[in-house]
Every structure is written in structure tokens, then in C-alpha cells.
Length: 293
Image (cartoon, rainbow, N blue to C red; front, top):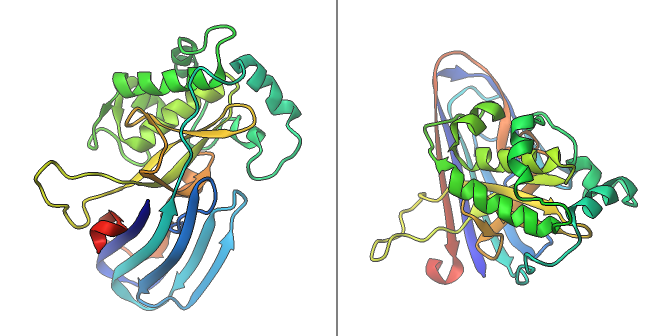
């Protein structure tokens, strides 16, 4: 599948802002069934300085500094990417989860994909006994690591309700779990905490999900959204699972960045020097190229 992506982020400030510094992670990643074809970002006001780098996990990151006083700040990212992933593995295949847990400490290497980086608690994902206990029902003794992770994903999808008003970006994991409500960030953090509580590595993945309008209805411009899901290390390979939708990751998912939790992969993060209220607007389009044509 060939996609055209647009991710528009616009801030409006009550009072002029004299300085802003931010990091952008908006470019589709390469590898694991994805081939980026083009990517450009237009920022207004024009930054005084801009630098691109790869972070420790290999995520393409652009750092910007804006020193022109402004009341509006726009980041308009546009990309083209091809996604062609192989079929998902059979949930009943793969090694037992206890074996996968033991392999973490003997994995030969500490590169960006090493499972050890994703097995410990992180800033947004502490290990909580109640979440570890919730995970145990999916991992009987001798059960497969992938089978257990797949079952855990389906249970979270069934037990939790998507509610954009229930949580905010900074809502603690314990509160989201207790309320059984939230958004894709919360669903993913819960699943990651559950897996790590059992010693199984799990990463937070940010990106986009192709959505389809209701039958007979036109696609609304800007109506899509950024998305998040989980990559689980099942012994020798990472497998993507989406607990918000209860499905494995296939060609409708477009990866942008991977890290330990949301703090590692926020699409736009930074600071401003100013006072007063601000308003944020985000519009995302994920359009197959044949529709765009």
C-alpha cells in the first residue's frame, strides 16, 4: 500500500511568544515492511536553526529553534511511504514465554533493538503489581510468548473503553488502568507494563493508522489521528500488536518512531518563552495514493 500522509500541528497563543525550541518526530521509519519515499516539513515562522539527527533508538528527529516573535506556530509535515508487511505469524507458534524471558539477559548485543532496553520500567510505564496480576491470565506455565501477548491484547481491547475525555497526556498509568478508559497511549502503556511485569520486553510505537469513513460518507480532511501501539519481543523478532483495536499490525499501520514509552517518541515536544493561554489544533490525513489521485 502506498500512502500520502499529512500531519499539521498549529499553536495559537494569546500573547506573543519570543522563543521556541522543539523536537519533531514526524518522518515515517524505514524497515520492517516500510519504505519512505519522501518527507518534508514546513515550519512557520521560519526557524533560526534546524538540525536533524537519529536518537538512540534510530528515530529520525529534527530539532528547531525559533526566535521570531509570533502568535501562531505551524508545523506542516507531508510524506509518502510504501507499506508491505508479511502476514502475521500464527499466535500458537513460537517459544514459551519463560524461555523468551530468560533470553533477554543473554541477548548478544546492546544496540537500539536489543530487548533489554525495553524490559525495565520507564518514565511513563512503572511496574505496578495490579497490572502484572492482570497479565498473568494470558500467560499460563509453558504458554507461548506470542500467544500470550496476543491474548493480552484482545483482553485489553475487550475490557477497556476508548474515551478521549477520560485521560490526558500526563494521566498516571495507575489511574488509566483503574478507570479502564482512555486513548491509544493509555492502552499501549497498560499492555507494555503488563508484559514488562512478567519480564517480557515491549516497546511503545508511534505512527498512523489508516481509517475508513462510514459507508457512503466522504473522507473528511484532517479527520485522521496519530496512533500508538505495542511491539513485543517474542524471541528473535519484534511483533506489532494494537490493543486499542485488538488487531495485529499490518499494512494499515505506519510506523514513525519506537521507544520505551510516549516520552521517547512524542511527535512534537519542546518549550516556549511566553505567557498566557494557548490553543492547539492537530489535523492528520492518511490517504492511500490511489484515493489521493
